[in-house]
Image (tube, helix red, strand yellow):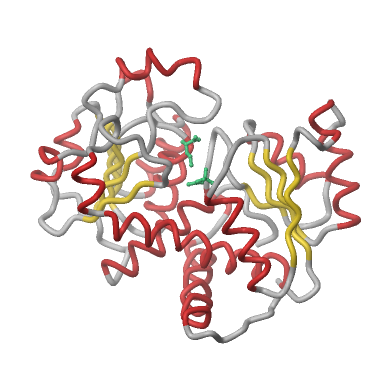
Length: 301
Ligand code: CP
Ligand code: NVA
């Protein structure tokens, strides 16, 4: 594993190794055991979009591991003034030990990896959010004891989260169902791959998708960069919500996850959110532990 650009590039074995190391690092942090596995190493973090969890968890993660992290806003970098990503990649490779980037185009992340000579981590693109899904898998394993055999139902936009959840879920042996309006389906190639490699369905019928689900998941109706479509999306996604009616058809002990930030009474009711807040904030915490494992694996090999 040289980079983390998207989950499709990882084997089940890679994912299990990351989750196992994350468990170990979480246990050690909880018990005050220092684990300076990245002493003297520096991570550059390029942000072309806002972030709370990704920024703070990567920065704290590098600190925990004995290294340091640089926050690089694209407003301040020359990349924001048109310096090619190919040149940025080659320059930053001379200073840093790894780069985390949050941007719009998946192609930009792939270009950094192609032209740079250090590990590149996708901290969210319009296409994928692999770091989030590694934390989600860790949380499912903690709460359910195992990942395999669960039914994961995602309700809402077929966006970066849906794409990565499909790939991560199918690779780890979950059934995956997506409930979304017809015009907002996940990536067609990912859906085709999922149908060929596991139990997958995509439907506009929320209750059918949620039936017997052991893990329910949702995300905002309008992602970063889609603010101009907010009013249209509010209409198009009306009803694509995790609420009591959806919970009633899911498995009795179903857990609820949300990558956050959440918009209460849009994609999830405040009631369901608060009833499952322990799971949702464990999930947010697990960003830290999962990403530390990714950093160690990529930088130390
Ligand atoms: N879930 C997630 O990636 O959160 P941020 O946008 O706050 O980083
Ligand atoms: N789909 C959301 C996820 C945020 C973590 C977005 O891209 O804005």
